[in-house]
Image (cartoon, rainbow, N blue to C red; front, top):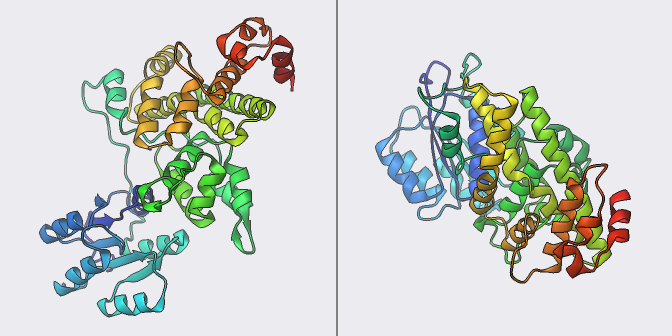
Amino acid sequence: MTAVDLPDVPRILIAEADPWVRDMLTELVLSVRCDANLKVCGDGREAAQWLGANKPDLVIAAWELPGIDGLSLLRGVRQLRSKPAVPFILLSNRNDSASVREALPLAPTAYLTKPLNMDSLRQRLEGLLPGDAVVCEVPAMAPGLTLDKFLEQRRDVADGAPLYVDVEEAIKYSRNAAGVDVRLLEHELRSDPQLTAVLIAAANSAAQHLGKPAQTLAQAIQTLGATQSANLILGLAMKRGATLSDDALIAQANQFWDLSQRTAEFARTLARLLELDQERCYCAGLLHCLGDLSVVRCLQDWVLAGGELDDEVIRHSVEQYSAAFGSALRTRWRLPLELRELIAGVYQFSSGVYTREALAMNIAAQLARLGPEDGVEELAKSKPARLLRIGSSELERLRNR
């Protein structure tokens, strides 16, 4: 395919079973051709049905698709004998010579094994989808759309929090002669709520076919592997709004990031004191402001689309929508139930039986919210502190560490 052959708006099919890899591929394609008309699906039958009614300019499909596999899709496309042949990038977990020999007679444009080499895939896409002159403006908001309606619409589809960590720098610092080091990568990413949540969700996706759920960042990276983890977070960094640009929203986000960090550190210290799971408590503390940060990120989309904000509107929006955004994200991303219960422990206890970890999370969150002039006496009288038998002296020592 050449620039002369390429239509004004290329039609591209992406077929991949894993939702997180699918999302990563989508962002990669859009980073090369932001105007692309995408059909994205996770099932081979849906992909085959679309191919029966449309002629794509590029297909990116995984061999391991439910229903109809990617190799069968490639075979069907080649049987059409299109001139020129439709570019088809076949992705696969199979790197054995027998699988390669099976695919080669069907002339895939590329046969790429997972975990993918993102640089190599980007170079191929740039060759297939030249678009140096393509400029895509942020879509304007619909006439008459209010901020409340905008946030209601975004609640169940929001991308999550803005990024706190510079992804490219984190991967750069994590590289050594053998590739990306798992432990170094975890160290570089562990302060970022969005990256932590997404990697845990990806590690627990159905595509991983593993039993025990990952509930910490370290467990997630270990499950996914360093290369796949790096690919996924690079995809997140490509998304519009991944990095905040509005000063007022940056200031608001910094408050939530700081609160997340302080809660996470208090939670880990309390867990160590009480002989609980330190890393799981740290992770729950880090993620508890995910809804607040998701609202902030959506507010930036509102600004980019031409909407207006002031400090009062920002405050009202966060107060009104953060709980619903956080709940929707945790459910949609299918974060492990045990981790979600710890996050819920941050907020309130009214009745029922509580785990010691959830009680510790509540105390950690209250400690993190204390101002410099606030005492710990009221906290020591709280139900979680009394149940865990943590008095004023212990709380004061925790606070001053």
